[in-house]
Structures are given as C-alpha cells and as structure tokens.
Amino acid sequence: MKKRYYLFLLLLTGLFVVYNFRIYRIDGTSMNYQLLQNDIVITYRGFEDIKRGDLLVMRHPLDPKNRLYIKRCVALPKDKVFENHRSFYLQIENNSSKTKMLGLRYDLELVHTPEGYFIKDPYLKYYGVVHNRRLRVPHELDHTPISIIPPAHYYLLGDYRDNSTDSRFFGAVPRSWIYSKVIYIFHHPLDWLTLLQIKEADDTHSRPQGERIREIFKENTKR
Image (cartoon, rainbow, N blue to C red; front, top):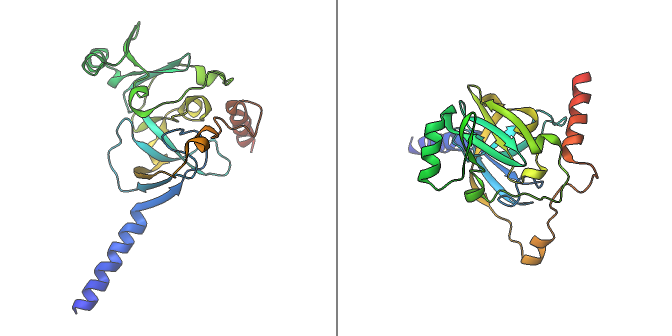
C-alpha cells in the first residue's frame, strides 16, 4: 500500500510540475540586457497577482506564427500612462497625489502635467532599461497619447525600448493573453568580447521593426 501511495504522490507531483511550470530559451533582443540570447527562464502558470516589474510570458497579437513573447509589466489596471520622446511616464492608479508621494519617497523623477504628476522612466533605475538613440524608430516608440489601463489589462514593454513591439503598438494586454510569470533566470555565460558583439537591434532588416509589424498586422486583418 505504501508503495502505491508513494507512486500516486509522485504522479500527482509530476502532473503539477508539468502543468504549472514551463522552461523557455530566450531568442531575440527586445529584453536586452536583462535577458540575453540563449538565456533560460523558468516560468510559473499558477500565479494570481501581477505586479509592476514582473516578467510575463504572453501571446503576441501581431505575430502570425502565434509565438510566445516575454515582456515586462509596466502598468496595472487603473494606471495612467503615456510615452514622449522615448520616455515612459506612469501615474499610479490614475492618482496624481499617490504618484507624487511615491516619487518623492523613492527619489524617482516626477513630471507635472495638466493630467497631474507622472513618474518619468520609473523602471530605468532598477531594471536597466536600454535605449539606442542611433536607431530610427517608428512614431509609436516615440510618442503615445495618455491612456488609462482598463480592468483586467496590463501594459507590457520590452526592456530594449527602441527595438520591441509591445503595448505601444497593440495596447494593453488582456489577462487571458498572459500565460505565465518568470520566476527564475539562468544566464548564459558570456565573456566581455562576446557581450560587445551582441546585436543591438534586429539587423536582418533595414527598416524599423514597427514598420514591419504594421505590415504584418494589415496582412492579418485582410484574411
């Protein structure tokens, strides 16, 4: 009886692990340099809460191959956001006073607008968000209007802000498109010279990524 019990327990544990955990290898540059090519991540499907800063595995709405992508959650439902001159601005819970208090408490850059206080580039300080001013970027990466994140939606961006198709193109992501949360990262060992040679953008095409994505989106909508 004990043997059967342990086998049953082992089977349940195996099913739990197989169902709830996923392992992915990073392929692409949109999360440079937090996640690099060939890094391995372990993700958990059974999570409930999503927090600002979480790395999430999502279904990309503009990818014709229906591949999964990893992006960072930068705004929650009720947050107010906009983009200007490649900087991201966040107002916590559509509450100017709360945003101001948070910015002052943690020494974050605050900007006062007619819509109240916003924190400028709140993730730059902690997550190594990357910009490359030499890249020519589409309008969506340089300017987005002020918007409030709707219920059960999340605003997701790549850490390499000038080479990522994300919520700036397709809007806040519904919860049903988010499959799992990154819980551990295995960094692929790289020497300094190899790091210097990492491509900083998708150099297989000469045009900005946003232009190609828009073309894919138009093709899909015609079908």
